[in-house]
Length: 328
Image (tube, rainbow, N blue to C red; front, side):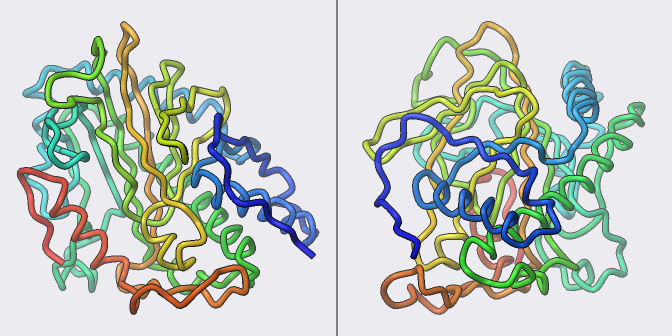
């Protein structure tokens, strides 16, 4: 019988070794899933090691990201996100406000998703975050590297979602119906250094929870990520070589009826150097209906009728961007 201790105020983020999750032995995979179960209930955050993504791919992408953000602003604006029907491309500093009521975030970004043609059914419907990617002029290596990385992270995202299903006492393929038309966004982010919390609570990324299902974060050696624990204290999630930081988004408490946590976090770059990170947000099909999983581990009655992935993501886009409203 599994006995679970109620969450305590975390002082650090757990590290989970994924090696056995790729095993042919179901018991080995389930053991890793149980480590995810514990982390999902305690903090909603965990590091992963032995994830299968080559280190040279990670290092090269961070180098290419720094090169892109060092370009003159007019060059970056050849891929201006405000000209994209699918909200892809370059996002200047102070476009997004993640913490409502605070000043806009002190970061700039570049993002892509699945590159979908005009005749794709969801593009024809005009759904948010579906369509072609947008690329800057005169930097072809950016497209080559970030597309390869996105595809590798889609595979890892599916793997983690299958482990999430196992962690809820469900078959590994429980969420597979949402995989074919999954929603994925990979963002290159640049955080200039700042002395501390600026006027108007100005941070690199304001305090927020992520919107969707899972986030897989590649961060450089600068660090700066902070997670709010159960006592209301900020704990650091420093750079650990060869790892990703994984956290659960706001759809996960819905599908687990509040059993798993989507935890508040922020970025504050108080180092005297620039910080670069690459979050990848992996979600199920835009039309996938997220309702509480029928697990014996959850308590109480289901909270609400559920929501589609797309309805939820479009609503969050409308709330957090000052210049662009998403159209569901």
